Length: 327
Length: 264
Image (cartoon, rainbow over all chains, first blue to last red; front, side, top):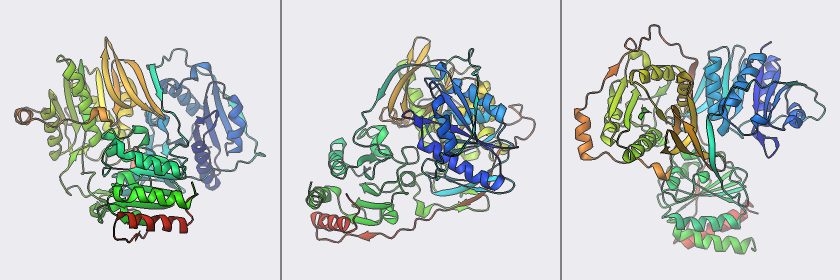
């Protein structure tokens, strides 16, 4: 019986939201094909999470709970994952499209001689195969791709799939996997780690995002964006150009190769609207664009636009909103 | 130390959506729209290699590409920026390869280049945005691989690699050989080729290797089949805020946003 294997990622000691979305996607495929859905759970001290994976849609959970998996090392994880894949022999392996998958998915694909489609945002489960939709050419086009190998691997963009359940009544099998990793040494040694302070809210979870781009003058001019974001309990984002020029740290980058956001309201300030940036924010419910160029492509995907230099607009906007929101 | 930078020529990613043309039959972008360019992340990768070379003249940097007739241009650019050598893997059968096939071909090309201690790839190419050739290549060569790297320093026999993480950065120590997938950062903004560099690059011999030269006897079959390529549509209609000047437009925008009940 072919099956679907989902790689489970952990966030804040719980099953991550993207993992729940991947299980939702797997259940949708399984509803058509009737094949079983498994989850692979790797880490240290994580055995307690198996039931929540079952409740989120897994029929069985392959768990490898081992001290040596406490810190993420792709080559160590790969060995365990390849062993689980050899046992399950799935037709499709789904990864949440997170940083870890950038390493794990292609390297596992190589070991299993399977094809991999990355950054998938949609799928169609046909009788003969699953066809995956993925943005290409900087999101200027969409490709529908079929994987010709017996094992198909896919990384899926977070927040593009509906999670399943959770259904507390669901029952599933838990399989403990022995880690055969005694002779697998981590490829790297972590010398230093700098984690940015998590401000009021993270970019991905923010209801309001205020972003700046090439049109911003310098790092200081982002202060106005921070002020507007703070007023609206939002977060500050940026385009790749603003990051490259050192105006904001890379963690603020929104776009194809940055964070993908879909807030209630998105303010695009001094952003022309390159497709690579739009890829990271086009899911926003309401888009406000402020740009001095009336022909900027950003306006074509915005709900409301202001054609002017942001420096003439933002001070009054902040003042007016502060009054209206009585803050 | 020998560094190999894998680079790719692509359709200019700066072409705006409104002007972007797709060849629906060939299921790819129309190839001759605008001047093809060096993939931007590969430009960052060349810069990372050259920064190492700036500090240690004994380092040799080779740029390598897989591509058709026009892709010689990106190799010339890499040489003009300061790379020492270039390698061109060129064969009609290479032009339709998927990521796995490309990685297999590059692995053979790298063996032609001799011993490679450090291999750099851009994190992804701005055409198919797959972002997997680097990691596949590391597997082909059975070497370590670090994603999202942006800066490298030599430390004795090992390397100190700065990489982005989900919520910040990390410095990793890694032995050679290793493959790094390079992402953009303010520390690796690519340099421009100098006039002297351009002149030198123009005179340089670039060895080419065909499938036969690389002992690839049978055609590599693709694992990925593109069934269709379409153009996305955004269903929005913009309303512009009127006003005599910026502040007046701002007042109208604030009133509009409040009226729409969008802000809490």
